Image (tube, rainbow, N blue to C red; front, top):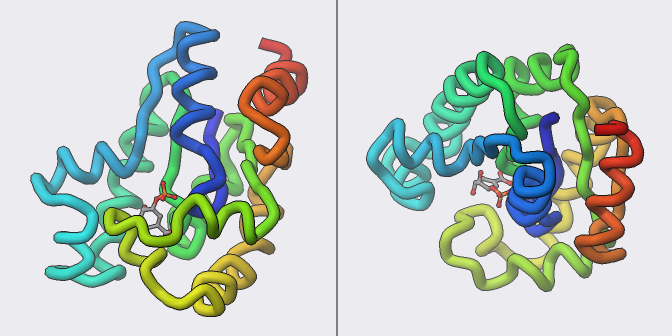
Length: 162
Ligand code: S3P
């Protein structure tokens, strides 16, 4: 299973809960990038820019696809064509976690660990709008996480019948 969705959609929380419930390993790609580079995400953005970050993200996605478990991605992974193609063509179930933009924004605004969230609200909104089509195209199932963790997990489990 691969979880995709914008920043603040709850990917990490949902991945952890599913991992515990199903006794599956969770691969958090942002963490894998930290381990690979020995740098934090803001450091990578500062020193190598978003293009540098996307290359690392593609590398850890490729590696993660070689192992079992639940893959929790970063919100911008689908903006990099090679990563988008992997997610669109995988045999794994791809779950798009979503919520109304205002809900997402309230969860991420002011978060210093997310370089792309520290822009104006309208800029973050434009980013969300620019990504939505790819999330939808890549996904097998879309879930509104504003309905709460338990309902989100139950909807996913029902769909995947695990
Ligand atoms: C990003 C989302 C982040 C992280 C990086 C870039 C994005 O992950 O990969 O800051 O482009 O939306 P989360 O979606 O887990 O916040």
